[in-house]
Length: 196
Image (cartoon, rainbow, N blue to C red):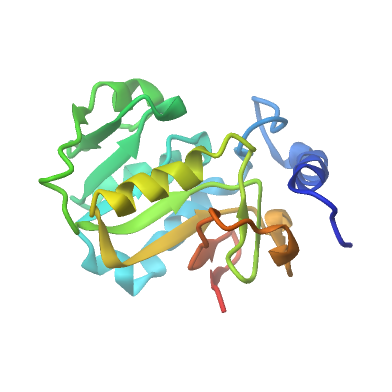
């Protein structure tokens, strides 16, 4: 199936994944699918993860278990508040829900220079070349751009995407735009996919 636009991909995925999602409905958002915890737990299968001291996570619900693991493992969690209302740092082993993220310490990018070894996002769709499609707000690409520009991302930082197997496509490269940041690794409930 060849999609004509990113929006067409989104509508297709939201329709297909809805039976695998609990509240809220996946439409208009990054789907919080059943099995997301299992996908997040695959982070520990990455040798790069074990070597990093700081991990960035988007605020999406699908990444909640990932944020918990980061804190459980004694790593620094750098997160962004919804709608990019600021970057925060958490170090305590708390359940890093949106409410807890809001209580995080404002991030000092100078302190974090070169320390973020993994940048984690959810997606609506992703392909085997690492082309990621978000919900259409552009926040994910801007977050990546800001952290790169500020020198917070390590030179060899991995871009990790959490996705249901239904969200992984063979090739969406014809829809990629210049500003789109590419993923390096896709974690699903059933596999770890290293992007070619």
